[in-house]
Image (cartoon, rainbow, N blue to C red):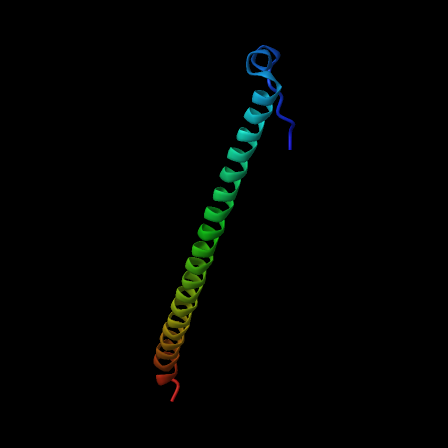
Length: 86
């Protein structure tokens, strides 16, 4: 993390204690923002993983239905072709 520096002109007006307090205030605000961001990011990733699991289940379901349809179509085509062989 980069070191916060108070400009010389502001340090002269605030004094050492005021400048240190300002730096601490900004550091605390940054920490709170990072904590909030990480918490929201974790929540959103959890929702995304759940959505991805649901989509994966839907894809598997539709693939299975597609395979059954393909099997039925191939069976029908083969039975029509083989009907004339007998």
